[in-house]
Image 1 (cartoon, rainbow, N blue to C red):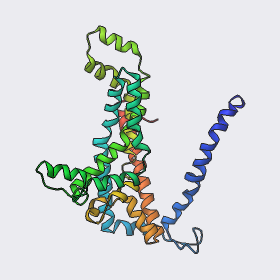
Image 2 (image 1 turned 135 degrees about the vertical axis):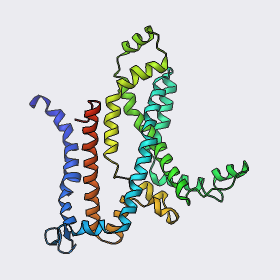
Image 3 (image 1 turned 180 degrees about the horizontal axis):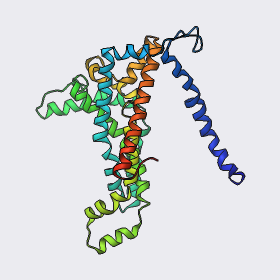
Length: 294
């Protein structure tokens, strides 16, 4: 241990970050079981057991935001998860390293752009009056579409914008996994007469299967979590029936209504379901394929 003391020093800031910002605030979970009063504090408020959870599950609005959260995450998982894999496979086939690095840089950039900036670009582009997309549609003889005011179109915009923003960053992990595949396996496949498609199917995909499974399990473990920025910034009153998710619901309860107890209860429910989904997906994966996160 003393020999690796400098490595432990490098690890110290990360440990401190998680202790301070992730583990220390966990005492606040107690609030979800209290009739919380900010003047009395966490340890002075009255204990009411599961009453806050009963109130949440009795509220019809909760089931609407729960449905929206699961729907948006499910669609993002189905259409967004294969994207980085396909992109990494395509990039891996490029022979020009200069061109490959250029493409990688371009597709990574959206990850670093704030959702505030992305939303400020998407909304004007899709405007039914003077948006460039609708201008093109009408120029081709079509009718203007209110993308951000129609529930179905809004969901499509939400999913596609999320894929566009994250596909390049997700491909990094798969590109790293591809470098670990033994090149002699491809040489053996070529000798056996395998073309590019068969090499991909029988060598490449099995080689990165553990990485795919781990990331799939982690994504399933976030099925109850939707980032606040994207639905809040892209959403509006016309599509609130599909854009209102658990994160925006907690925002309204906790910050706008100052109902800290119920918002904490929603957050705890969200975390517990995510944990159950994560464990369940891992157990199922271990049983079917033998691979998992532990």
